[in-house]
Image (tube, rainbow, N blue to C red):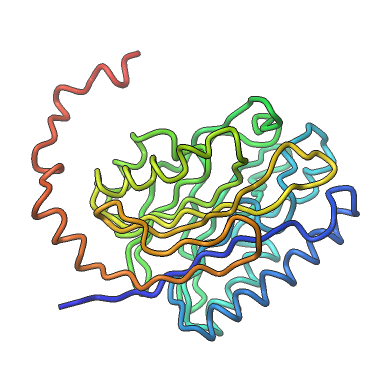
Length: 289
């Protein structure tokens, strides 16, 4: 018997420029996302994920302390509370990427997970923090995540979160599967010419290696004044066979919707017995080097 969950992904351009007042950027991005979340609700989306650092620009293109003003506590912050209201209104699970403040001066790249009744369930903190050209200076802004690889039991599915650069590391993707994830979301900010050739390779590989669905989200457009490259959108869902089943364009705001049949997880795992045939007792070298 099928168990269909309607999933949604939102990719957007930056409204205005990174030179605009920070408060105005955040206000406009929240307005845009509220409209798109309402659209998702009207179309019956049950589990929705937003893009990395969704209410601002990808400010890691420079190293300036002014961007620390975008931090919020979770779940006490205004954005979490707003998303709780929207989740309850639409009976929708929402994964909400937020620049999180634990205490003053200790900040994380985080995603809050809110259940369909508006209840805050928990959060995931990005583990792998890049610091590289052409403008991904994330170590200036974020501590590495310290909450492990949790799987959140929501009203519709058991979901995991991996954030952007995390996707290059198969270890956490495997742990999410072992922890019971049925859908893994990867909110991202990635540009053409850097790792675009991996965009449709790595995450379908995680999906088939672990027998779960993946929702991959990327922002859109060239963000001034940094112009570090084109965020190429192309957000997609892939199934446990590694097949992309719904995908957005490269160059515009878009809501991606796919009906995910969670029964496919059992079907795939009954054929590809990767979990049965694992040999974890032989893998010690992975954590010794």
